[in-house]
Length: 212
Image (cartoon, rainbow, N blue to C red; front, side):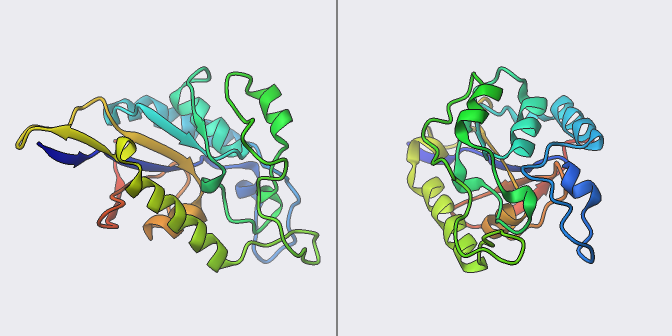
C-alpha cells in the first residue's frame, strides 16, 4: 500500500461590491464585509455549473460574507461547509472587517460558527482609518500554519490505495478563500473565482481550467 494525495483546490471568491469599485488611488469605499456584486453572483453560478468534474467532497470556507456567498452559489445553499478563520483575507481594507459569529449563524443557520472568536479577523494597532492592518509576516505565518495543517492532517490529504491504483474520483477538497491568502500559500495571485490546484508537499500550484 502507498499513500496518495487527495487533490486540493483553492477557489478565490467571486467579485465583491468592494472589488467592483475599489481604486488604490482613491479613499477606501468603506464597504465592510462586502457582499458579492451582480457580476460576482454570475461568476459563482458559472463556476458551479462547471465544477462537478472536480468531485469536491470537503469544503473549507473563510467566514467572510463574500466567500460564504461564493461557496453557497457554487456548491448549493444547504451544503455543509467547514468554517475556518485561518483562510480569511489579510486585513487591508474595510471589506476585510468581518461579521460577528452570532449574526453569521442567523444568516447561515445550517453552518457552525460557534468556534469563532467574536472578532475573528486581525486585531492590532489601528491606522488612520481605524483598521488594524495585518502585516505581511503575520499573513505568511498564518498561511504556513494552514499549509502545515494540510500536510499533517493525514486523513484530510491522503487516501490509501494499492500501488498503481488510481485515486478515488470522489475525494477532493475545496478551500474557498481570498486573493492575498491564496497567494501567500501557493504563490499564485488568482482572479475572482479562479481555481488553483495546490500540492502542500511539493508546494507546486497551478491554475485549473474548468472550461468556463
